[in-house]
Amino acid sequence: MLIDYLPILMLALFAVLFAAINLALTHILGPKRPTRAKLSVYESGVRPVGDARQRFTIRFDLIAMLFIIFDIEVVFLYPWAVVFKKFSAESGLFILVEMLVFIGILLLGYIYAWKKGGLSWD
Amino acid sequence: MPIDINWQLLMPELVIGLTLLLVLVFDMIDSLSKTVLGWLTIVGAGIALWVSVTMRLDSTYGITFGGMFAVDGFSVFFNIIFLVSTMLVSLISINYLRGDSADRRRERRQGPYYLLILLATLGMMLMAAGNELIVVFLGLELMSLSLYVLAGYFREHAVSSEAGMKYLLLGAFASAFFLYGIALLYGGTGTTSIPAIATVVASGSPSPLLLAGMFLLIVGFGFKVAIVPFHQWAPDVYDGAPTTIAAFISAGPKAAGFAAFLRIFTEALQHLQPEWGGVVILLAMLTMTVGNVLAIAQTNIKRMLAYSSVAHAGYVLIGVAAANREGISSAMLYLLVYCIMNIGAFAAVILAKTSAGERLTLSDYAGLGFRKPLLALFLTVMLLSLAGFPPTAGFVGKFYVFKSAVQAGHIWLVAIGAVNTAISAFYYLRVVVTMYMREPAGEVDVSPYPRTLVVGLVLAAIGVLLIGILPSLVFDAAQNSGL
Image (tube, rainbow over all chains, first blue to last red):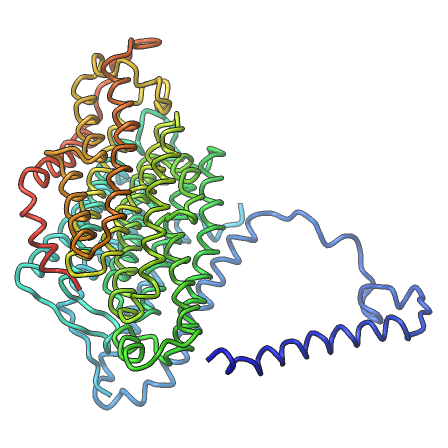
């Protein structure tokens, strides 16, 4: 039974070894001539200004959360639209109303977030 | 494609969903007192409870949503447990949240509190009725996410925030285990439907994938219902969370976790019982013993109740380990009894508070029997029930759980359970002794009883005594509701 999983184990081992050996070889064999440009975070990119670990206001967090929620809900509309035709002959009205109810509940949540000051910056 | 939805079967869930939207709308009306939201929650849960009871009486059962949602005696019985817990917790929350603090911000934040309680309830109901691992997971997450926020509800208190954060981190970790288990079960059987998994499992010898998935599910559930060795979060979360929420977390969600556990393990993985039976017996022994022994060492009453609730999960596991019809129905009965008495005990703890704040250390209870005789009496009833003395419901619950295990031949398990009951009597009775036989320390504070809290406590006490004296009332219902 367990023998069936042997190829997976071998593949995993091979992947680890391949990566490790390549890294080790480049480390040993490759010549190192560092320059300032080569050592920058993005070679031939924009020059970094300051540290990335800054504190920023918690409000971004709230906005990001609201964005994610509504964004995901919109994504849900796509599969619904794709299968709509399959259902439309027999129960088109039903799934249309269903989606309207769904959007209605979302709208209620949106108004709630608005009313509770979730969208205002101050 | 035709749509197959039997709305009648979804009535309790729909009622809770509608209540949720109403609370949401009413919370937006600023002129409305937030207490109304609490009453609305209670009424909504009450209607859902009434619907569930009628479904139980008329046997309105069936499977809907393309086989994803199973309404049977089992899920309806659990719905009744959840709704009773939700009603009791909302009842004790109304006064607790308003409190005597003039904190306007907390007053305004009551809306989300009831919303989250209702959402968690909806999640629990999904877990009990989920006939699909994905639906169970959805319900589990809906419940857990609401509880994380509720645990950290008093965000101005550092301990509450810490409780919420701890619960979130460990809970998310547990959810990952659970999900991985589902993935492996799917890998082993090619389906996530519980009845379909049962047929696949019955047809051949178990693959290692299936077994690995099963053990991951045990770990995931173990976290959610606080089974030793996955119980570490419980004392900290119960201690830091608002006391009403500690009561809530210890009641409904634990029952919901066991509901899904029972459905998955005794239905989908029924034929793997030789594999998981031993593990469950071991976990039951560990959970009872560790929970009770550690409870002895606690001086904070909330932490003591937390360890006691860990121990009670162990008693329920005895019923699960029996894994027969009797075992399942006795575990269900035990969960109902446990929810009522535990919420009652927490309500009594809230009531014991003075103007100086909550009384949480054991020595605070010295002399309470003389200062607040009625409260002490009710707390005594709850503690006796938790310890399992007749004629309380706790005795009935333990009796049937032990009986089912004896019938299944797990004599040793029952022996350890009985020893543990004796250990637990020590720390429950210690509180009673402190209340009645120690001189009160500090000032005598006779603050008036908040009304809804008293109603909640009295209802819990009536429930505990009624089930204790007439156990057949609910035992017959549980017996006919097993899987």
